[in-house]
Length: 255
Image (cartoon, rainbow, N blue to C red; front, side):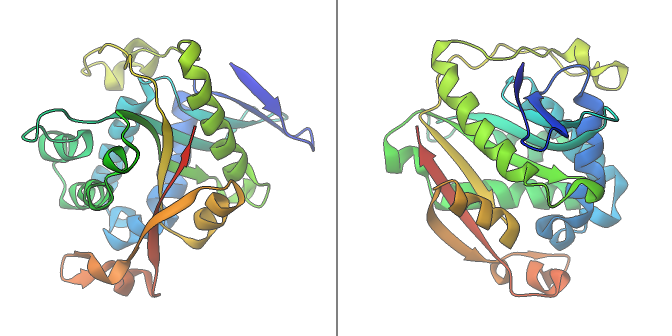
């Protein structure tokens, strides 16, 4: 589904599809896994196998049909991607949330496990389901833009469209993508039923100043701020590896 053409006429914003899936994964591998602060903090940027495990997480999230991309019209290149995940509140206290299950069952690398466990821990420290009394959210999970397409506000546009996707889900699915669309590399993944619950909030963990600015511009409210000094990997805090006193924010917007 096409959502819009940017004002400069250079980019088409659309729902993730079979045609853009592998290009979107390239964006995550080349940009998020190399440049994102939490990827540096957990040394994803030095571990290709760990990066590939994050791509598998993206593939799993893609099945929810709520992810979006920016396509450079002249070249057809996927320039930016937002892999979004429909999160459902657990009803049994002993039931683990999605990120914890993925980290425990599908990560072989300490780096990828550390990054996903970081996401699970931060989400757990600020339980937005309880705060708002809701049972489903759309989480902007991974957001990235290829270096040569940056400074075109594609991240902001993708986050804005992600909120719009969440709003439209009350009328039914906006996009359908299946394991078959991913190609042979991900053929081992089981098909699963689409999440039937409708999100009442959109949430995100902003892990760097650029995404924090996006959240502010789109009126996301910050509910928790956590310094990277509180998280460590392989004997060093995330801040030490990044080389700066970085904080992350848990933010959300009510639909």
